[in-house]
Length: 409
Image (cartoon, rainbow, N blue to C red; front, side, top):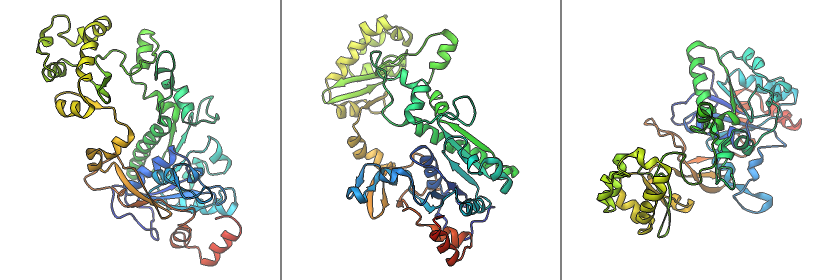
C-alpha cells in the first residue's frame, strides 16, 4: 500500500486509500477524477498558482463578475483536495515526483507531449514508482498522425462521425452536450481502474491512453459496422431510428414523448392500452418485421401512434402506460430536477463551493457500500497546500513559505 499518512481520507468508498494526482482542467479529466473521488479516492487537484483551472470562472456563477463563484467548477471538482504547483519550476517538479512516489494514479489531459516537455512523462514516473497508473486524456490520443492536434469536445464529435449522424438530413448537428468530454471521462475511469487492479495484483502500473475521438467512435452504435458490412453511410435520422420502428418522438397535448413499443410484446401492450386490440392481429402490421418496413410504417403504424399520443398529456401517457411498454415524457431540465424518481436516486445533490450552495448532478454509480457525493464540497485554489506539503510530504512551515515566496506553490 502506498503511504497515505498525513492525508485526510474520505469516510467511505470502494477506492478508499487510493491517492490520485489530478493535473486536469475543464471537463474530461476533472469529471474522471470526480468519479474516482466520489468512490472514495483521495484526489489532489494540482493547479498552476497563477493559472488555475479556467472553469473556476465558468457560468453559471453566483456573485459579481470580479468574484464569481462557479457552479460549473463545483459540479466537476467536488470531493477533491486542491494544491497549487508550478511544474515548470525545478522545485515544483521535485515536489510532484515526491508525490508520485506516494500515489497510485496520475491523471492528465494536456496535449500529447506536454508531460514529456515537463520531464514528467510516463517513463519518468514509473522509474519513481513502478506501480503508478498514468491516465492521459486527449483529443486524438498519444499516438497517430493527429495526436498533436488541439481539440475540444466538438472536435471529437466532428472527427468521430457523431456530428454527421445527428440532427436532420438538412442540418447535421452536434449532440447538445459535451459528449466527447463526458465519454472520454467515463472510459478514462474504466481504464484507470483496470490498470489499478493490475498494479495491485502484480506491482506494475500502466499508461492508459484515452482519446476523445476514439470515445465518440465507440458511441456510434451500428454506423461503423453497417458501413464496413454494407457500404451504407449513416445519415441523420432526426428523432427516429435507422431501422427500429415505432421508436421516436411523438407529439402529445403538452409537449412530446418518446414512444418505443416496437417489439411484438410491447406493440401488443400498446394496442391494448389505447383500445386498438384489432391491430394486434392485423395481417399487414402483426409482426415486428412488417412494422419495420419503411413504407408500411409510414402508411399504417406512424399515424396510429400519432393519434394515440395526441389525445393525452405527458403525465397522462406516463401514468397509463406504466411498466407495460417503453414510453417516456421528453422532459425539460426543470422537469428532470423536480422528478421524484430522480430525487429519490440522489441524482440531484447539493455541493458547497466558497460559501455558495449549488445543486448539481449526482453520481450514477450506486454502490451498496456507499459513495461520498452527499454533502460534498469543491476546493479553492491551493487550499490543501499545508495538508499536502507539510502533513503528507513533511515540508516545514519555513520551507512552505519559501515555496510560496518563489512562486512555486
